[in-house]
Image (cartoon, rainbow, N blue to C red; front, side, top):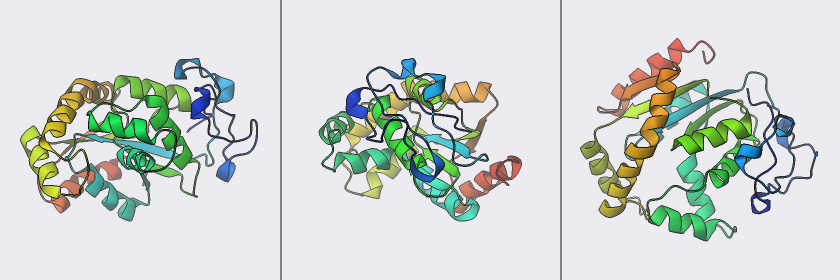
Length: 239
């Protein structure tokens, strides 16, 4: 599905892989150089390691239960779970050049630049032996979506959207007490405003393309997962 990913991000976003050299597990990369995602060329994309590669986007507001349901999907259907938020938080506490920038951006409730997030996702796509991926919490905006599609030359096979009322999401986030810097009422309000303004257009886009499967995220974990199970049963490329 992924054909070939491009190599014209800013030099600071280099994957540090030798130009024209072979990547991990059948991927082939070019070094990222200067330029923007809009300048990615067909010849600069990354070949999939498996012809049956499946990508599912998992969307929903903070506290909608995406992470919990992704764990169940991994156990039941054998997908590899890539959480955009977890990848960013992991990078944030590392000694990488992006750590401080990501920290400041998340604390302010803003969106991390697409180029950074796509780089982290591509790094994970190129690792391991899986050819079935859940990309959780990305794209968060139309700009994210466009950057991903230009960079990978592909779209997701299907999209799950966990639909949850705002008051329920607030309650869940404030009660989970995981020690995350973004689990406070002020940041939560910012995140929900950003989600409504930026993420819902992505949801609408995939709904119009017939790729969106809306999940009622209110209920027990098993009740919600039963809806998810039915979606996967409908998608012939997964079963």
